[in-house]
Image 1: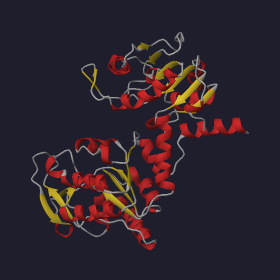
Image 2 (image 1 turned 90 degrees about the vertical axis):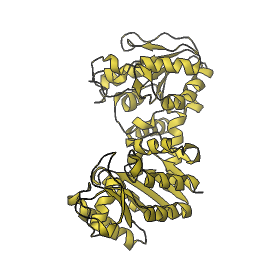
Image 3 (image 1 turned 135 degrees about the vertical axis):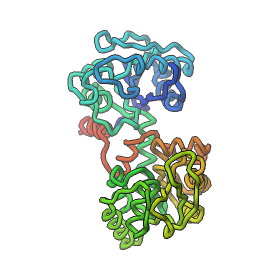
Image 4 (image 1 turned 180 degrees about the vertical axis):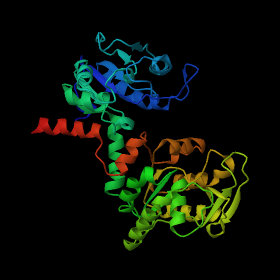
Length: 394
């Protein structure tokens, strides 16, 4: 696919789709990490003499209805501060295209205020495309959505290319999955097997050890014949968990389950933590973390690994008494010499909580996109960029 670095941008109208979906509290950006990650692309376009328009979604407002609670005004203020130049918010871009000088930047109001955004409406997609000479898709976190501002505009823009953030994600994830250094370990945590079943199935065919965490691990513990008490698990997917473990074993791979866990009698910050062997769980116990023996076992996997993919905590790390497993796992990943990738909202929250960011090889900005990439799916936004490139080369 075409890349931004390959484009001649001077005097061109450049529309950049970024992921500026940041937390807003009391009208102010609470975390500017996504904004800071996006600045390089904007600055590159500015330095090249482009007329720069930036678009993004924010939150989940009712489509087609303006809601000041989801306005990008605070984001425009933050971008202005970080760039050191005034970046205006434009709300009328579909009716009156922004007039810009070379090197100027404008932020377009929340795309989800536009009716037809989520349904990838062709008329809206063409309207976005008419704003620009070059469309730049740089929001990996939304690349799995076939929407007007991610896929539709790329279909109809005069030129469509990938930005450096998107390109870096593709290269890092492809490199880890296509030609991984062995052994390869994947940690997949989460509440339910059903929400990540296809990821588990795909990774079980690729990795040497597939470590389930959180509620997902509970279903595998039950599949191994242990009582999980009052823990969150999925009875109807025990057979799937058994099948995955048998298939992995037949291929010389492994889906390990915890040998010990930390349980409580309730899902609360006040629950008393008790370490138990998985063989000793009673009917009133709730499994809320992995135990120290399991932490040591998983740490050994990380130490021996050549590649690590981390998506999801292994316990309820929001509660301090049930956070040690995730903390120890994260520390082991950070200390490993393996190439490591971490992605997903809860995973990144854990990375931040334990200050691991500088020691993880690659931090993915995607949540759903990260998972779908791991499943081996071709993401809609990437597919259209590749298609546009291939058709132009034919």
